[in-house]
Length: 138
Figure 1 (cartoon, rainbow, N blue to C red):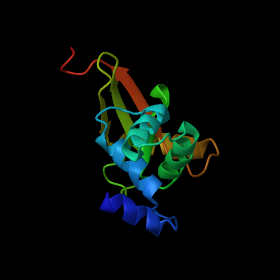
Figure 2 (spheres, rainbow, N blue to C red):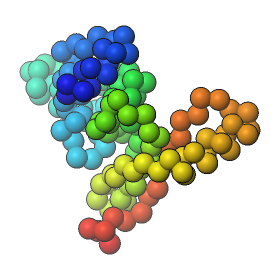
Figure 3 (cartoon, rainbow, N blue to C red):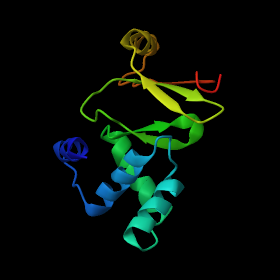
């Protein structure tokens, strides 16, 4: 939480109670969480309804500031356990249990960035998702 707060403040953003609650709820999940899941968690914590749209706005901010990662294929989010670290994302997603593993392989993502630059793209940040079955389910 302290690293997330520090990273958000360094990005020139405020660390509000609501943002802290959303980040705490996201960090508690051991699987990717949707904005609806998080809105429900934060609503229970606060004792009043929190709209998923409010959570989506906060999650968009968290993704922009590297506090969270969006798992595109699941339309869900995971907390970035190293908010100050700017590695590109490689997600391994289990189709059976939903477990997600985040790995870093700069050789792979470096090749993707080079290919994108060769095609005329700038400021590329790869997000690679591989679906399969984890060792526990296999």
